[in-house]
Length: 236
Ligand SMILES: C[S@@+](CC[C@H](N)C(=O)[O-])C[C@H]1O[C@@H](n2cnc3c(N)ncnc32)[C@H](O)[C@@H]1O
Image (tube, rainbow, N blue to C red; front, top):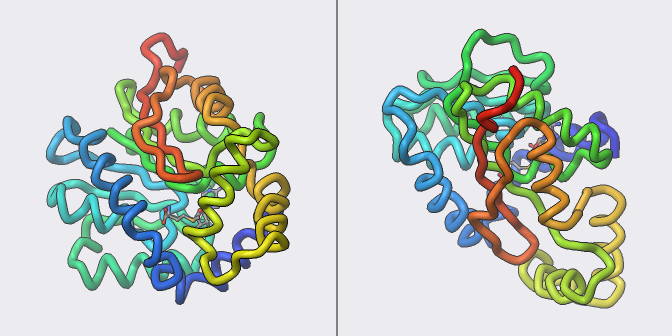
């Protein structure tokens, strides 16, 4: 899937995105609960970069818990960003937000961010070199001790481990559509449209962009989340 196709899909899903994923809210909530701890030592005036913000669930969660933090949201889908803006207005944190409709490479800012969040985004970059370049762009926007939290669907396709998790995942995300054909479609999508690769391979991609070896701080089904910081010896 290229960027235009991906943007069209998220534009089309935006209005019902939160409702659609409400069924897996416990998974998201668990991740956000731990994310709060990952970022707990950042200063009271931290500025956070959110890449692939979507409808802004992670922004809303952090904004509630850290009332002086500011956020820069990068999101190519204008419709997803509109839902995020409306949420920020409703929840009263819009004055702490800047919104960039587009990709990271067109974000113009002098800010060096204390932390970056990138939840369920890098999995859409199929080429490993481009995926590492994406994390390099994030690293370039962070302070020298900046923290990254990133999550993706991850597993080693072709293994029994993956097949077991995939069957579980189907029951979680598509319970109304349990069939072997449905499972085959999901398996095909995860090897073609979404770069579902082994957790160690994702960690290597992130580390290659100038981060310390990432640590998995959360796993639920196929979702894995890594935390890391800029490598102390990173040349920048
Ligand atoms: C699965 S959604 C996740 C949204 C949100 N982070 C969450 O966890 O609810 C992925 C989002 O990333 C955006 N996206 C896809 N590719 C991107 C890229 N290369 N850079 C920034 N955002 C991207 C999509 O438009 C979409 O809103």
